[in-house]
Length: 365
Image (cartoon, rainbow, N blue to C red; front, side, top):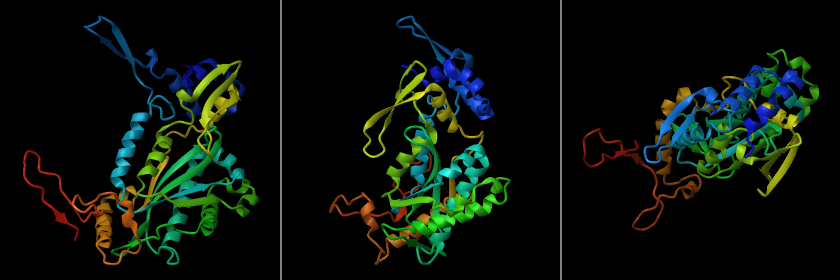
């Protein structure tokens, strides 16, 4: 089976000679790491089987985040951590995409402009959520940057996973079950915040004025409890633009790979010249140290210690006689006697190590 490493070993040197502008340090390092991954170049271990007498070699992984062989376990670990952060509320998924004319500039100054894109989008969503015409509360967001389409074309956009509600003072406010904020004012506000931030850089003067007259594409939809949305996002965080299993062949300087149609998930194939294939792959290599998952609002890392208090506020609202909307349908825990839904109102603390006994129930205050 042909792998990305095989393609880079065979064609990588010629590609960089023909495209000297792509000789970015992050690109060169990624190509080198992928080619050396799980080869004798990185060392490894020797294993011997007493039963059959065979000797086996296990070579070290490169651990580069753009290597298709190294990311599955990390993605699963991240997913488990994020599921622990989920609140017992409905969730929304917001997706923000920059205009096509701006993509070239994002590609040329990734570290600066991706960060501005993150901050402008999150700031706009939180600002509208604080508006009393919508939610009128402070919210939390998890943002994930994605740069590729299914055909590994360059298409930078950010997915935000947002709990359906927020905090006002010492109260939890529910959002409507199918609405968070309007996307049209959100589009204009993101554009405005991004423009204001860009003025502080040396790029503002070279960006065409037409960009500031275009709508930035925004979409928001309810996604249930949020767990399915996290499972959707996890592969994009630690997966690379193309995996080895989807590369079908390399013949006559052309790479054929498999992908799923965006509309119906039907399998399709795409064939590119090897130079174009390597170019598309390198477009998604992020600068060293760039963080592609970011947290905002009450989910920000510095505010994470207050998350238990947020859960307490939600617990109080779940006990309210008049819940604002039937969010309880999102919960699957049911009474074993009558089969009616049950709701979280307290926590069972972990038992002290080495001590056995009945659990101590602490109600939500």
